[in-house]
Length: 134
Image 1 (cartoon, one colour):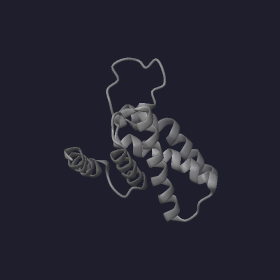
Image 2 (tube, one colour; image 1 turned 135 degrees about the vertical axis):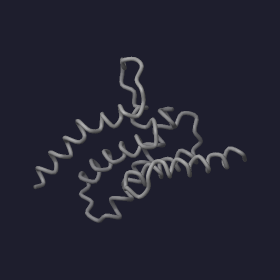
Image 3 (tube, one colour; image 1 turned 90 degrees about the vertical axis):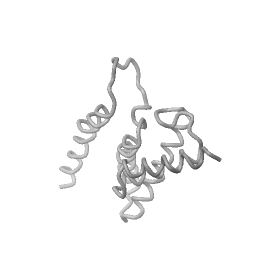
């Protein structure tokens, strides 16, 4: 059963993840090189990337309890957001550190299935307006 589930996981990663990523934006030209900004271009893409990375990490460290897995997913999402902010990828281009970490937290919540991208995007836009006014 474990081998079957691993097969389904690999199938989803190889065939489903690119479809999700391609369905987000219209590509007007053929990409000539690897663009990491695609994987963190939107909040939904950050959540999808976090699911994949967290699953790999959790399997490597053999975490068993549910809350530990959720905490790892949130931490991984925040780390990915911080790295994306350092390199200026996707939506993290010219974003402050507070909003970067909040977007990382939101990506972790999406990866854990605790909230949807539309709800969190609205909350983050409201917080961003308050932060930028100060």
